[in-house]
Each structure stands twice: as C-alpha cells, then as structure tokens.
Length: 131
Image (cartoon, rainbow, N blue to C red; front, side, top):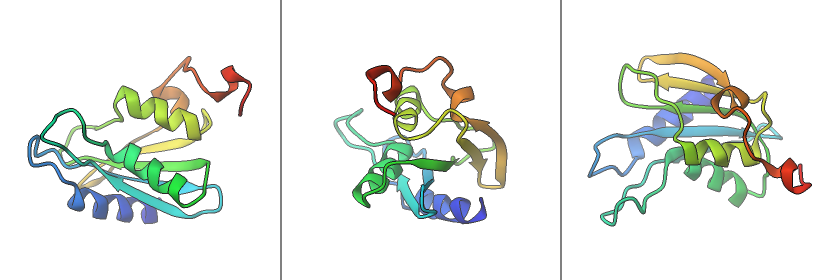
C-alpha cells in the first residue's frame, strides 16, 4: 500500500481546489500492478469538476486497463474521508466487492474498508449481464 499512498499524496498536492480548498488525492492499482493517480479538479461552474477517485479511474482506463485491485484515497484533515456516492458507483464499475479501499489522511492510514462495505447492495455490471 505504501506505493499507492505515495502517489495519492502527490496527487493531493496537485489538486486544483481554489473554491473549496479541500484537496483530495487518489491512487488505484490495476490488474497488472500498475498505478494510476488522480486529484480533484474544481471548476467555477460548480459542480462541474472531477473527484480524485474519478480522475484516478479515468487514468486507469486511459492506460488501457479495466480492473481496480486496490485503492487509496487521501484527504487533508484528521477525519476519515471516504468517496462520495458517485465515486462509490465508479469504483463499483471497475472493482469487485472485496477490493480494499484505504482511507488516509496526511498522517497515514485511518481505516481500510472494501468496496462492498462502502457500497452495499450496489448496482453493478453484473446486473446488466457484464462482469
């Protein structure tokens, strides 16, 4: 997880959050062990920005990958930061229920949960006959 946390920290520093001042970074590992990072990118036409998790997943897809096997999300404060509802659905599209999501702060790991714990009874690709 250390490699994912390092990348997520770098992404958090690169976030573009002039409105909320709430910088978030994320990193995902693909099915071959590759790492993909993302940060939140805000926009004056709020809420037309991107979340860090969505940006990391977009980087994964842009690299030609399709599976998330592990994820780190890092926020700026001492409280546990978890993915928003939209990002939970995005993670569900690319990750199995047992994939670990590490919720971190500047001081390191706060909690580890699975995609299934974050998003129980979720709608996913298998409902459409895809897996």
